[in-house]
Length: 142
Image (cartoon, rainbow, N blue to C red):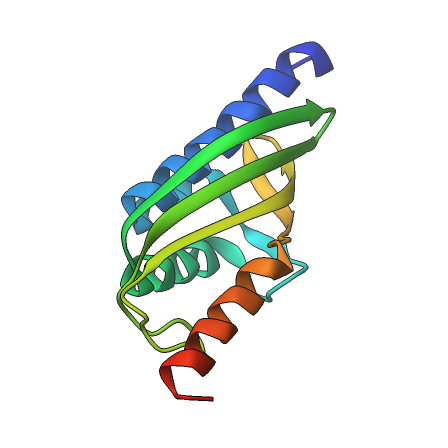
């Protein structure tokens, strides 16, 4: 496959990734994430890493919605600017449920080889974390 053909396919693979995250469809990750995949940000490697991350998001945030704001693909790299919303109804790492609306943005990079994601770098806007920590502090009276 030529580079000109590869770029749209790589972008489609990443779009499928977000579809599987949105649907919390663990089986879908097997078809687009390499077994050797390395998550350079969170250490959730391989298809099971994506499945675990998606499941954690869905357990923590009801009515989770992910919108892809921008996708830029070049050679084997795909960058995605995303926006997600939901209601914080479950535990997320050290953050207890607030039962309040949640909103987050981020910019992720993926390397796609032969139709599979082999590397990922995840970056979430730190204001999201600070806002949730402030909400936790307010709930705990501190």
